[in-house]
Every structure is written in C-alpha cells, then in structure tokens.
Length: 113
Image (tube, rainbow, N blue to C red; front, side, top):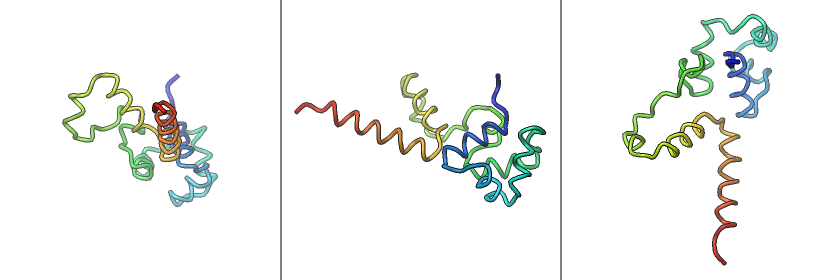
C-alpha cells in the first residue's frame, strides 16, 4: 500500500524527533488541524509548507523520488552506492545520526589490532 502524504509527513517528523503536536506548531497550526489530516488527507495548499519544513521537494512529499542534488559524480557511482546514498538522503536527521554512529562503530571494530 502506498504511503499517504500524512504518513510520510509523520515519518519525516519522527525522524526529526517531532510528534504531530510539534509538526503542527512548526506549521503554525493547532494539533487538531494536523490530526484531521489523517482521515481527510493533507490539503494541497499545505504541501509546499510541509515540504519546506522538512527540506524536501513537493514531489518527494507526494511519493516521488528525491530531487537530484546536481552532483555529476553520482552518475559514476556503482548502482549499490547510488541506492545507499538515496536511502541515506531519505532519512531524517535523527536517523542519519544513529546510522553514522553505527557505521563508525562497525568500522572501528573491524580495524586490525
């Protein structure tokens, strides 16, 4: 089942450590307004403000692929590295922090003694 705009917004918020009340506050709304979006859907006039709040494109909010960063080097990367980079970019700040900490621990554990 495809993730709704509301579900995506909620997931991105959780990645930042924000609950629905915090998201509502950052959008200048009452928590009830955001809660109503779960049943009724997110009104189109709120797509741009939500995308801006999370530093994403409207296309990403609507379920499209992340916009290209414009870095030409990405085309030279192997497919598995491009997939890893795209997955990393889809994470929230908090998720990125945990992932990087885990990767650093993994790499330090693998160093020969």
